[in-house]
Image (cartoon, rainbow, N blue to C red; front, side):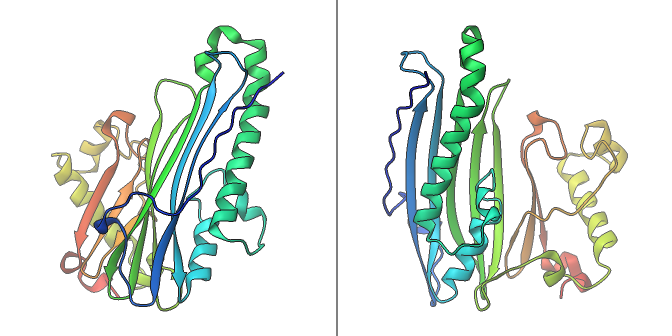
Length: 262
């Protein structure tokens, strides 16, 4: 029989400092926190699932549109909330996510553990998400999520996911909103140039020898931090390079982009 010990704390405030919350005239930010632990059995050494969430959300002008987009943008995974278009508050959404995550853990790992107590440690699970917001510039909101997850195996995975919003409209800002049509190849070339400088190699072949873009599929990351005068592309752990390389960030000033910038 599976025993679940679940402790959930929900409150406003994520212990952010002043530099981790955007300050904008029309929007304020609050947060919801959850810390939850579920054990598969009542044994002292039973595998556990630990969830720790600190999720900022918008209040004020365009807040509902921003929050609805965030809830269905992959900040929380699995993306359970995209299955429904129901209007719910951020607190309700986070609570629903945690309950579903725990239920899936108990179902997916419970049967495995009952059949394999010898490797109990491999059924431990950790999922942490901490978010903060930054002023990206004139009318730009950067929403940044730091995510750590572990579900067995040699190591966990750390990710940084960023969503950029036009505060006046509440809409997400995509690459096509920033760059002129036909920008792709020139921007790829610029990213490769910056990447070769970062890793002290001459060209793409040099990067490939370090197993960066090893499959020759060079692409522009949709995961970026947009500022008034720059853009920073983020490639997460294991995305384009070996795990040991970690996260790769490529910052490009607006002056370097030239006519590609709208």
